Figure 1 (cartoon, rainbow, N blue to C red):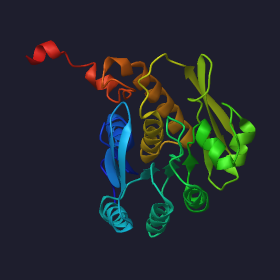
Figure 2: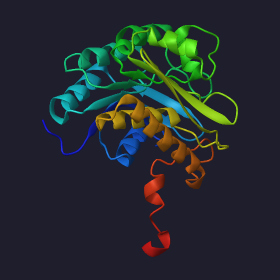
Figure 3: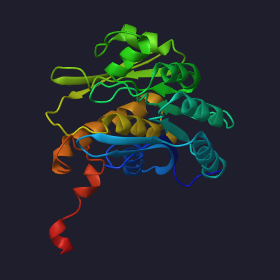
Length: 275
């Protein structure tokens, strides 16, 4: 099938606050000129202050969503985010195995901003055995990298840790530095042949909800367009840096607000002209 427009699929949870999860992915795909399809794995009740409820969808529902999208809409890249538990991980892996492999960006959502672990050990083992080997790229932050490697901590730019993550079976690793310290934020991209570092100033804002979802979705958007992986990561790094830089202009909620996914487009509107 020849698409007139690039298409990407997000398999992730829903964020009622609109800043992360499926909502962030759809906004990111759209902002970067990619049509968004979605498979919802969980429904969460959350806002900028807290997550008050999580309900996982059934394996049957998740499988049916994947089949419906893959059989007809046929995306050119897939991003996977929150999965919730081991049965869902197995369901997603089994469902995707029915179709030809596509570029797959796996954001291993395992640790909340509070530091709480979101996946139990059984689910982490399933993630490592079933989905990481299918991934074109995994995008763990520093706490998630530590969990995957069974370490107390991982530092920003730790090449040895990135190599250990690569040995889990994925094609490439993006070790994100957002949880690090210092004036510069650096993300390390490593595959079997090369390594690259993408850096930008660390910005003083509390409005960073959804950064991980947004980053991985932006990379998937680049892959859906046919960009090489390194170019997709570079584009995504620039896009996220700009979305963070404009986040305070949104002024959403009273807690940790979202990044500004549509920073480029909204700046074109003059609200005085709409009255």
